[in-house]
Length: 211
Image (cartoon, rainbow, N blue to C red; front, side, top):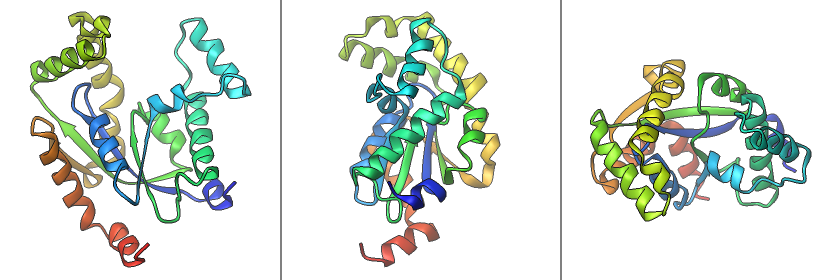
């Protein structure tokens, strides 16, 4: 296992936005570009080894219908990240991590500070909640998850985001946040994100390495 990954903070970009804003889509697209590695919280849980001590602890909470504590969520995320380094899928010396879905709240952001260096936060903003709700319903029907198309469920997800996740923007501060219009076409959103990254000194330094 990489000692540098265990002891050094990893450079990362955070894609943040309300449900339906397209953060997962943008994260996946960025992750397909060389020198970017996408890690979504959902992937961490889907690839969880339920036989491991952390996996058993996770199952104990989920089987009772309880929320997984923030410290356990961060431990699971970090273990998954180290597995990716071990498998040479992610090279922290030359790759930028792209996060979405984690940190989910300020407490998780605080717990992750010793492990990652958030270089910038891209806030996919769309004040028109009706447009976001339309996207969520469309995706729910496409994925055959009709329960997710319920108006009650959608509004609850928006409320949770406003109360728990959006305060992360204040935690990192306005100087680290770029507002992106999430109502644009996905290609235009990607262009706005990439354009901001390309002028950052951290990206310029990696680009100069010609790796």
